[in-house]
Image (tube, rainbow, N blue to C red; front, side):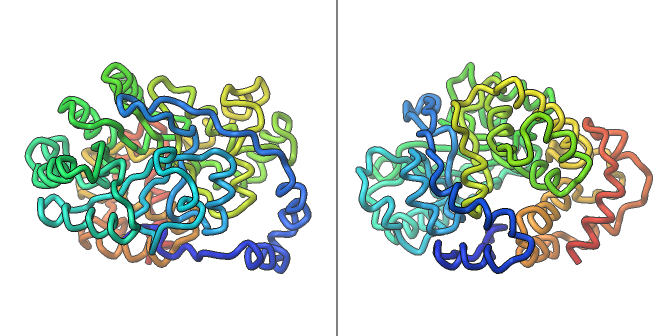
Length: 388
């Protein structure tokens, strides 16, 4: 199940009506008209590694609210991630040349026949002759899995021979640096979508990004907005950001620029569920950070290191009780930041009981291993409370 299955698809009319009715959305309501009238510059296009496709620097996803699809197309966004979640192809894409946009379907089966059937169901349901990318969705748990579990790669080969897919890719949440390094060494993958750590990638992840660039493999950074959405609720952090960006500055655009500045990163796929976030994420002045944005990025990077797990996995090997620390903190982000608590709790309940956060022995080994210096034990306790 996707962590975003609870995302309600709202019409523009319903969304604006809800925003007007919500006291917490008063500021958004006041700025809605000006946001809609704002001139949205077309996105910047960057080569997605050896695919040769020129992708928009912002990648959209199936779980964006439905009425944002045409807005995205109008803004020039031309990559759509995880479209197997759609009940059918949206009108915004039906009406444009298929060769001008790129899409992927995620695969979560190691078995050849299962992976083939999953892909074909999505392709036929969407009425497409082909889908650009067959994307393995975080199914590798260890580097050894990359070379040991290959059934789905046979499905990809069959589909490619049939002209139904062009490229092989993968998304990765679990220990993304070491698993992505293993994938890169196979020379099979045309682009990857790892949780890069947002504004604070570990040295190991930065090495992966450089390796991807050397091998001409495109990188689409994911999980980049968690710290931003947390920081916006923190009064002290807002007070530090506003001198750089002002009270209505584009935090999302600043973060996206910061992530794109890392060597090897091609594009980002930011969480975008409403028009306010859509406008916040799209810059009006290219993708190079302005001096003020550089200052804001540094504040957000400092906040992220202490408050948002990068899922690097270093704590996993350190924990003597085998607690699933990165997974737990990721599910908490889905619940608290992405506002999908039902799905997050279901995923947490799916963890073996002995790997849940209440098995923490409070030894502190995780904190000693954390490269960010996070108060991991405190965050685990809070996550367990949210997820149960």
